[in-house]
Image (cartoon, rainbow, N blue to C red):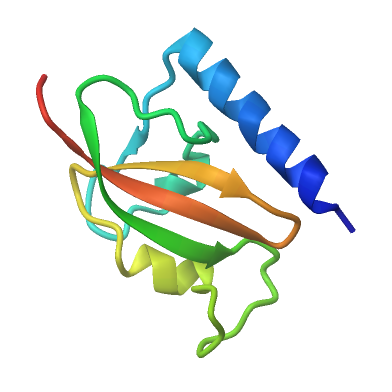
Length: 106
């Protein structure tokens, strides 16, 4: 099991790497786009031209069930909207926080 310091260090490293590489959120091509599985891990980095609209707590183990605090992947997919960007902002051992972004400029 990962301790809190390990999780924080991993998230900070992801943010630094995303900033350095200027990573962009995965943009959903249609509602419920399963391609969000490829969303990058960017930590607290918010790329230029994007703003945060919502953050989701999602089960990453594949063993979650409906009714738990973390959305199942299918529950999360039901919230994915065409044209919005998605990125992992925090990652633990069994759950992730995925943020939804809206473009502010092109």
